[in-house]
Length: 247
Ligand SMILES: C[S@@+](CC[C@H](N)C(=O)[O-])C[C@H]1O[C@@H](n2cnc3c(N)ncnc32)[C@H](O)[C@@H]1O
Image (cartoon, rainbow, N blue to C red; front, top):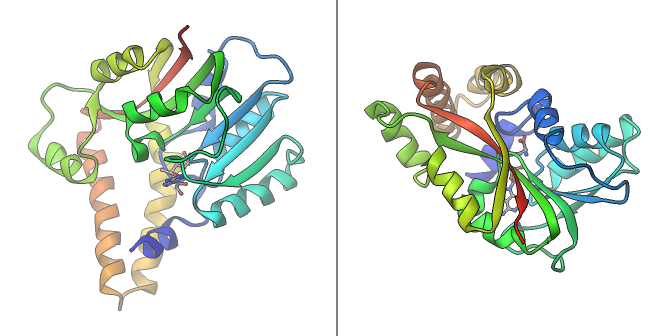
């Protein structure tokens, strides 16, 4: 099933909602860095945000993912843009990071912390930050108190741990961080960068994989997610949380 999943997503511009304008907005909310600062990008995927961070800053960025083909894509793009001196990649597991304590000035993770769990990720990754270091993540959250049944039932299966904004903000402070800024990703970050290319891919794959029952089932799930977003997007969203390690 995992291979089928990657067959759908390989080669797409992003593997989750997001856009460069939001990456920039989050980055410019951070305190100034020294030129020697180092950044860890966890669950980087094909690294659209890694490349944007490299355009924005002179810092060294280490991009980590557990899917090697994504890292290969990122390396090619970094070379094409002459950003390869600033970006290195590492194949690794976010549950078991191969780093020493206090190695990084900034940890960045767009669309990936849900894999380890929001609060668990905050607590575990905190130790890899230098004193006063920053953590920036995006997380899918409920934005209304009473989401319609259809949306609730869908996300209860796809992301049962999904929480509200107040819950996430409490988790941030009880995990040893101070929130600097937060905002929701705009609609374009869902559509133009993510669901539009994904919808085109689904149409093409339905033709190519018409005989594969598991693939057709998976494509149906993707279509359902897009439909749920279209109908109920005022009830959930992707939040950017920009925070600083507390003393
Ligand atoms: C939703 S995608 C986000 C990718 C990218 N940051 C973006 O916004 O387009 C989640 C990423 O986490 C990676 N991933 C999944 N499990 C992982 C793990 N245990 N350790 C490291 N990366 C993982 C996936 O390969 C995928 O690239």
